[in-house]
Amino acid sequence: MSTITDLTKDSVIEEIAKVLIETGADGLKPIVELLLNASMKVEREHFLRARSHERSDHRIGHANGYKPKRLKTRFGELSLEVPQVRGLCFYPQTIEKGQRSERALKLAIAEMYLQGVSTRRVQNITEKLCGLEVNAMQVSRVAKELDEQLEHFRNRPLGELIYLYLDATYLKIRHNRTVIDAAVLWAYGITPEGRREILGVSISLSEAEEHWKEFLRSLQNRGLKGVKVIVSDDHSGLRNARKTCYAGIPWQRCQFHLCQNAQSYAPKKSMKKEISETMKKMLGSPTYEEAERLKADAVEKYQVKAPEFARWLEENAEESFTVYEFPIEHMVRLRTTNGIERSNREIKRRTKVVGVFPNKESALRLVTARLMEIHEDWLTERQYLDMSVLGLKKAG
Image 1 (tube, rainbow, N blue to C red):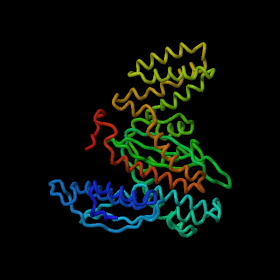
Image 2: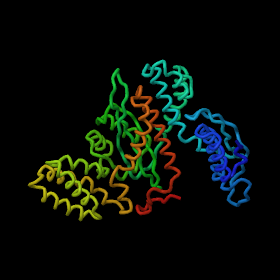
Image 3: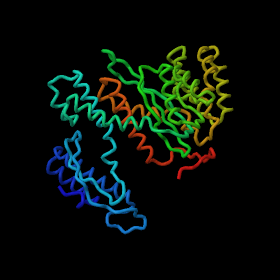
């Protein structure tokens, strides 16, 4: 195959077609090499703000050739040519992104093997998949290197934050010779510049109040301040910890979870859809006054045919109306924890390969690695919310 220095965008496509015609599916490895090399070249051009050999007033530096690198992946060991930049700090995210969570996944599988979860007959397959010799010393060394990066991310200093989102998901972990559903507690927030950030993550035996308190206090100890509203579901442990650690801070109860809770008060299955539609109409109101009116109408309507739902609605609905105290431009983002739920699904997708983690440390390693990659993706996206409507600094 041609080297990356010989390729243009059109020739990349031609080269891929040539390899597939000659080798079929067996040619995937060289194609992955070609695509990664081409992507890194494009990334360097974006970094320098100019294409190769282009004269431009926007250029901030100059290319300085390529450095060979061997990278172990599920396609085998790849031979890459990493673009260099003269006098500036540049390293392509093309090969950096995904590597932490990939290594964390491989370590989890290797640890499972060492603990006897796998059998000796799969040792060769495990070593090929993990890309490292599966022995305690090697696994420990690689884990230590990765844990240092992840520990730094989890404990980095925080600053002012406007909106704080909290949630939990569950993973299966081996603990004291049994398997438990351990709680992954984590948080993200919106900065005064309107950017999203992953703030922290921990793994506990449950969502009990003491575990949430420990997690929230760790955020405060790292410098988190300025929170104007907290968005979460109504889990009792989280509710009590929030009241202790963030007394006086307004709380927006997730409207999605509230709708789900409402259906459990339907006196018969056939009424669940009706109650769901009632909730959606109320929570979709454009103003607080309209939401209050629809709540009062629903309470009166269901006094006889669903009295438990009527009582529950009267006591709980207003916990999801806090959103009306904030600018209408922000309301869609503040109504629910849907943003964190999407990331929960990504965590599940990445961790389902393991199934049952060999220990808490292994699970925390993989979850942190994936969240760190999500965090880095968020840093490169456009402004999430325009904070100028709050009179705050607008992102530059």
